[in-house]
Length: 310
Image (cartoon, rainbow, N blue to C red):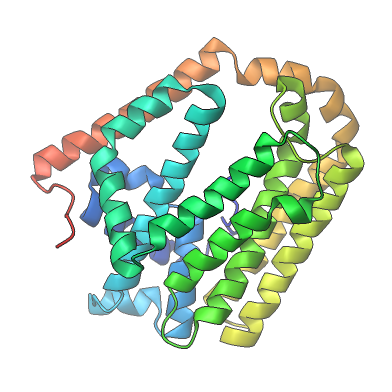
């Protein structure tokens, strides 16, 4: 889900921004959190660069810390996205691994919330409200229009993007965030529809026609986000380039989904069985634990614990 904004291909400036965001993530929250950097947070960082006439390459060359505030915010956003995903896994599946990770990463997560509240004292309350609205839609268990289902998450993304905006840019960042949030959730529902149906998990899409409509809705939201970036930052901006790359990847994946929709539906139970097989789950769990343990060892070796808010 949180790799949706990974462009194809990644240009040099994008890779530098990704590295910059990962550096801020490990600086403030420790190496154990290095794997949680999100493409959505990187996009907010790039939008800040476009709006403030900075570039990741120039910032890297000058060894400047002028991006310190947005770097810290992108780090906090990455962690909170990971927190939402883990809590979702605990709520939906009772995941023992997610529960353990929540305990292991309690301090970084708490510090991320504290930083958010230092930016907006009502930040945690507002995010909790968006999440509660989203959970209520899922709890209904009913199929619904994709425009309805994406609403709370779209508003959450708009709010988060606006927090990273320089002065006078809040409305633009918020509008872009809402379009990206809408595109992300709609695409996630579409690609997960067959497996969700096989597993008995909730999905707001009623049938294959709704899946096709969700893909079209997602694509249209990306197109609107691209137009906003063109108008706000220019055709050669990094944000416009990133969304163009995301659309390129989207079209490739959507074409594969469309060409295999019939077989995907027929084979969904098999895919579900393979995805949930003990060997696959064990591999993923071992890898995740190794990443966390390796990061914790690096934190200890470097004697650089995560920074707490002052």
